Image 1 (cartoon, one colour):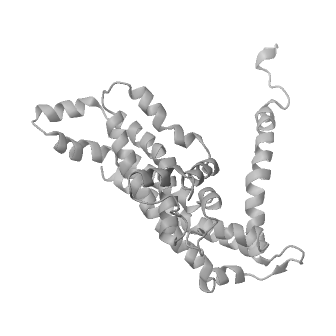
Image 2 (cartoon, helix red, strand yellow):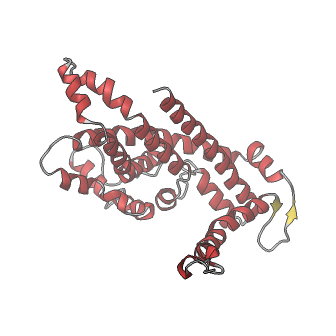
Length: 301
């Protein structure tokens, strides 16, 4: 009796080949992502300061952060003050640019390319650019304001808390508005033209078509854009590091920057880990609520 052809015979160890190919990637993910995440969780339950032995303190770091640390509470407030107007302006401007670029206009490809240039650079480079623009003596913004008679060349954008917050909001709006624009533009281009043609046949105006077709069908892209910007702003660090260093007087110190100072300036590694996990828990919970809202809206359609 002849056996099966050689090509159909199982090769010893062949079914494990796929896992051996994936093993380097899995090891890399463990070393780069999973191990630091688990180890920082372990450290967050300990008192760990460089040069001193690690001591288990249980939930003490979390209790201190939630109940006693006024600096952390202030950073949460600062994060909200910065994030709310930033998300609002980025959404409005991104939506406006998306609506314009969704039309059949000449040079649309050139305008789109120019508008997305800011998101091609890192937050640190964006911060350095705006730091030069905000310069008190030689900054371009003060020079323009002096030319139109609004301010002099010695105007300091970072002298007070409200000014510094405004400077950060303007810089982030310039940097990330194109990101929101691209998400909303993709959503607009996914809407079938037949729906607008049917609305015109039924006698609907542009305003009616916008509120009955465009906005309802853009619900998903809008929530995705807001969710991603919310997550990104919850860990706002690069612009703060370059522009203000948390000043003046801690007015622009965000939660991520506070965790950085605690860990790398005061070397309270255990407490900094606890702060980072509190940020992760809060952001994860709020993101879950937004995603829940998103899927609830999709189910009701």
